Each structure stands twice: as C-alpha cells, then as structure tokens.
Image (tube, rainbow, N blue to C red):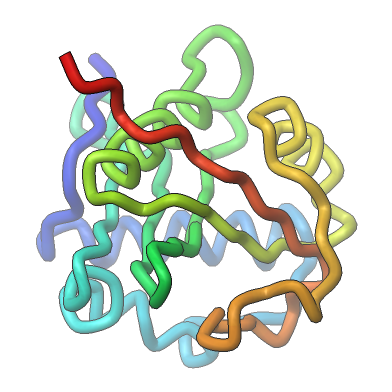
Length: 166
C-alpha cells in the first residue's frame, strides 16, 4: 500500500540511504551526506518557516520524498524530490502524487510561486516538471533568498492558482 505522509524521524536512515543511492549510484552525482546537512535537520531546515517534508512509503518502506522550503514573498522551493527507480512510472505515479501533495499544501499555505533547482542530466525529471507547468528560468530570475545547491545548473518556476473560495 502506498502512503504519502509527513516525514518522521524514524525514517531518517532509510531516507538518507535512498537519496544517496539515487544521487551517487544511479546518477553519479558527486555529493555526500555531509554535503546535505538538511537531511539531518528536517524540522529546523524545512518546517521552521511553514515548509514541510513528505515521504512516500510502499508497505512501510520509504520509496520517495519531496520537500518544501517556504521563503519570502509567498514563494516556495521544492527540494529532495526523489523516487526509487523501481517505483517510478505510471504504475505507481509516486512522483506525481508527491508533487500534487506539495502543490496542494503550498496553495493552502498561500504560496503563489514555486521554484526548484535541478541538474541538466536528469532529463526525465526535467520532462516531468515541464509537464507539470514548470518553466525554465535563468538563475538570475531566482528570488534572492533561494537556497542554491552547488550541483544545480537548471532552474524552474511555476505560478500557482489561489484556492477557489466556495
């Protein structure tokens, strides 16, 4: 059974292992756990200003993640979007479900624009973001308080619609 829930500290080791496996072994990105101290400070880094961190679990095992950092001017930053290789694609739709959860949370938190940074070699990820209404932007168009990761070389933006008042 697939569940998407806010991150729990008991998931830390599994989460870090999954992310490093994808970064280092699948995509050969030269990054370590030491380069990502945020993974050990979820509450302080992501949740402190109204952001959140979600995990996708399948039968209790962490198979995906996505995080939101809330920055100034009603903006949010997507970070740590990962799905284990064997859980990608249309059978599970985990990436879409994670993004939908983050977008819904963002809209209800009055975030008007989402930004993200990624790496040009992650072609499938870029197609996924473009399919979900993210537009490529220059680094110079990022908000001043956007937390740039050293490895990121592609940046995207999506404007969100306000929730409909019924």
